Image (cartoon, rainbow, N blue to C red; front, side):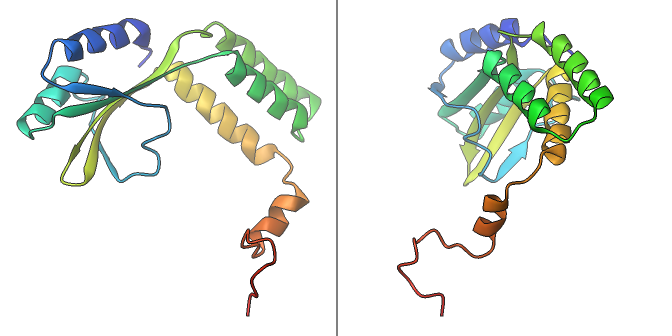
Length: 168
């Protein structure tokens, strides 16, 4: 779904401010390493249903996360295109896609609301279609990037201890 998350973000924050929840504003990526259960926001897009569930579970703190698509996101993908092993036509196609994404600079690219219940994070998240396409493009480019020899050496058993301990 191609959503305008900027207005939805403001709406959610106003709703949370008027609620009994304490709002903990966090950084993007903080939930990536945690065990999460994701709300079906496609079938049930109303964030109020999610927050009602949090309230019924007794949650007192809601984690709020959002990210804005910025120039750095665009520069990162430009650098990846330059470093990749793409032929001229493929690079042109990638740059064409990148131009389309420039129109979204400064817009909110994803929202997450989460609460903890019995050591699990329950998460409501939304991102517009254009951002999903951007992520697919970055994944595609990542596969095409040459991998450094140094990275291969690190994965060959370097324990990061600087050689102070024996591997015996």
